[in-house]
Amino acid sequence: MNNLERAFEEAEETAAALLKTVQSMATQAKRLQKAAKEGNIANLEKIHANLDQVLDDLETAVATAQESWPYSDDDVVEHLHDGYVDELFEVAEDHDLRIYERDGQLIAYPSILSIVANDRSVRIDRKKAPGVRPSSLVALLIKTQKKKPRFSAGAFLRALHGVYLELTRERGNRSLVATETGRVVPLDLVYRMFTSMPGASREYTRTDFARDIFELERSGEKVTRTGWEVSFPSSTGTRSGKGVFSFIGPDGSEASYYGMRFDKADQ
Image 1 (spheres, rainbow, N blue to C red):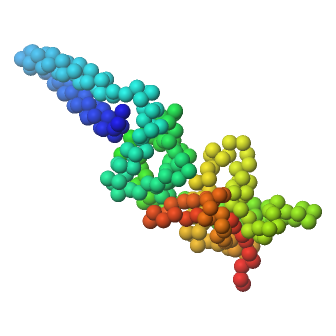
Image 2: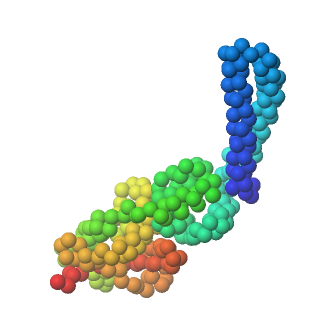
């Protein structure tokens, strides 16, 4: 199996041929109905002859449609595991869509894709896509890029500040953040707080978290209603890759984040 897109294209073509034959059968049925209503014996005889040919054509079209899909479920699963991403990239390139791979997920700003091979499906932003045909997915991703993002910068900023206060709150002269890091909180720790419920990290991945930080910065909304300003300081961790959250923006540039802090905003 080396071209899922072509297989879908051929299946679509056989479906179109079948539909055309079905329409021919419907046309003959309407003519037959009219001839019977009028009592036109000559037309009845002609239509009966035509029906024999249309029926042969229909049987052929049905058989062709049934045989048009050449792959088993195992073939599809294997291709989704190995080969599908390359094919998706190729189709995306043909349509001037940029897709990047990070941490086992695909990023086509602002969408995040996950290939669920065993389920023979693709998820876009945690929602199951209608299908896995590469050209259909690319069209859906391009359509999403043209929509206004539904990201709520204010809500995410408040959530970050709440976690920050919890992590830096003194507990008997101690806080959850090590003293040597000062008031910069590692984002890895913040993410673990966000996904502390069982299974939460599957629903809200590291890439999802990185995208939200990226969108927050892109929005320009940095100050909470109570006057605390967020920042995402760089660290040696950003260079080493340990504990780093990365996302790819619409221009293809990579944004990396390691820690965050809140300071009282200037009045």
